[in-house]
Length: 104
Image (cartoon, rainbow, N blue to C red; front, side, top):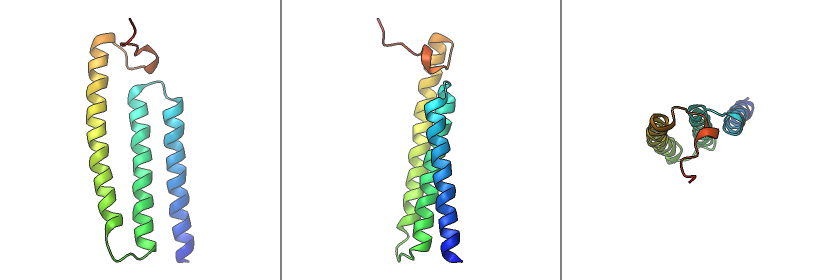
């Protein structure tokens, strides 16, 4: 019973990661791409917590890493949204195809 629950959690995490990859590859909106990256980070967090729970590690390293990843994801989102906001002010669009500021 315990192994079935573990595999279910891993499959849910895999599905979330694949949804995130699909979102990154198919979204044209920069904010949608950032949200897909967040889904991928959350999938990794689920994996870390599941492996910590079911491998019965003595240390709580599987809990510390997700906290670190959540902090990293918050910083990434803040920087990404600041960049998107500055680009939006310049070109009045958040679509990735129109972001060609480095072209001469």
